[in-house]
Image (cartoon, rainbow, N blue to C red; front, side, top):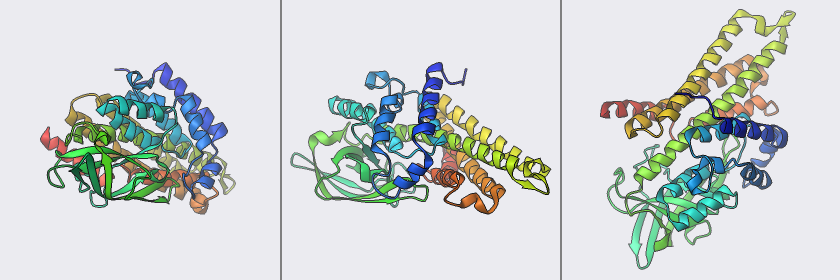
Length: 377
């Protein structure tokens, strides 16, 4: 099997990297992070015009990609520039819409691809600990629709969303994979409260509380109580995206550190000539290639049997988390005291890498999941 990007994927990646380098400077990202929506709306539309959003979805759904390699090509380019924007939110919500199908889903997905709508995926809860089936938000059937109550945590770009795809339990107990349904909720719905905030990496998230939020029967996405598979597949696509984002950022951190070692002098010679530092950089390079290989393995397994797919995804996310921590520590130490200053671009990449570990499951969660799936195989 050939794991190299296709010519179309390589062309898209090169175009996005050039656009990011020329039109999306890190300084602008840092300036926008403090206030909602946390990204440039003009740049968001330009990314859509370049095809960054269309590449995430199948041609039958209005996109022109949708394969794991397409998702990885987009997010690796975004990671190389530490780009802010609701890309992950769009991938997660769009994947759910693609799975459930129907006229309403198709219309919303086309709006996402065109950059005309931001739809956030509100699934994780304060006590869920990354477990996809642990949903306590309740949906009670009423006259002509549903009434939703509960809380959602760390909703990516939730304070910029026009609508939310909300998971809620329609039957069963909190840990039951069966009985979870998906609902479409407008951002201004009565009873819906949103508290946005910025993370240490400059990316914005939100805490979302639903207090007897009423939605019509037509706002139910897919069959009642059968959303778990849709959620799991969407999160799997999100894991591919995050791992690719991380690999893109890791490459930049490695190059920044190598360049610093080539130019910083001590005792009249570049510190990169010291053997001890060369050994540390060799370890960094090897670990980054391990993360890249784990991502490639997850991409290859993505459309295969469920257990193989989920194990490969957990392995990739675990490997990225471990590699990100090691490379971040080495980069900061090798730069010395300036390594974590706000003015140095390196610090922004380091924070992004460390936060990637906590999105869609950290190293502890995915290691435990990998072991559990191995027993089930």
